[in-house]
Amino acid sequence: MATETPTAFSTFDIRVYYEDTDAGGVMYYANYLKFFERARTEWLRRLGVNQSELASKEHRIFVVKKVEIQYRKPARLDDLLVIHSQITRLGRASIIFGQSASRDGELLCESGTHVGCVDANTFRPAGLTHELRNLLEKAQN
Image (tube, rainbow, N blue to C red; front, side, top):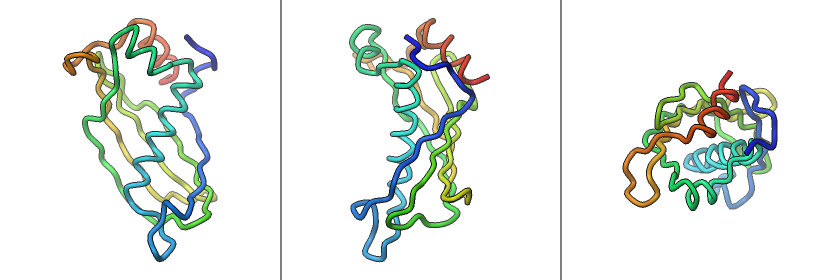
């Protein structure tokens, strides 16, 4: 499963494009959530977690249960953002990710995203597979 050695955090660079902004060139607030989702997904991918295979072979998918977000300063057109992600809590069938977006070291937004692992067919909570749990525990520490 693992393709990259698990680390306690991940960084993901992403540029703010015209399509991400309003008429004033300020990034639309909901796009932080999209950027955070991409960062989590790419971190898992680098760790060797293929979510399509997880769904088809293990019948497990991830769903966002809750998001807490704090907006501090606006991102603007053409900004290069760095998204930091880390696992702050690992439960039997859940993961809490702490994430932040910064520009040139300046904090713009931070969030806590509660992700549940559910059965792909029933959407009922389902425990993380043993292999996935081990990998995420290594990435958490």
